[in-house]
View 1: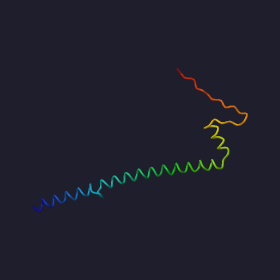
View 2: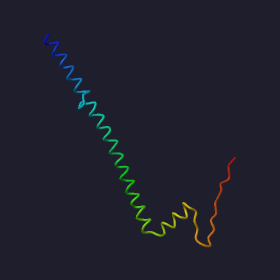
View 3: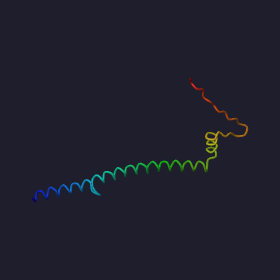
View 4: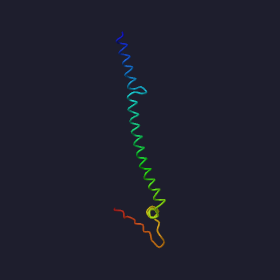
Length: 91
């Protein structure tokens, strides 16, 4: 009888140890989630750094602004002509 109670009690403790609120499975899930969040934080920090560099260039570098205007918006200075190259379909 005592042996059966000990076995059942041990099984209950093992189940709680592995699957309880603070069990190993929960710990594994939290560590996995933490790794994903840290990866996201790292990515966002890099993106923030690039955006800060872009902001600095936009505030202080007229040549960079000119380059963006030419590339993105196909703008030109007075007297310049903008040519649009259309690739031929290879049929």
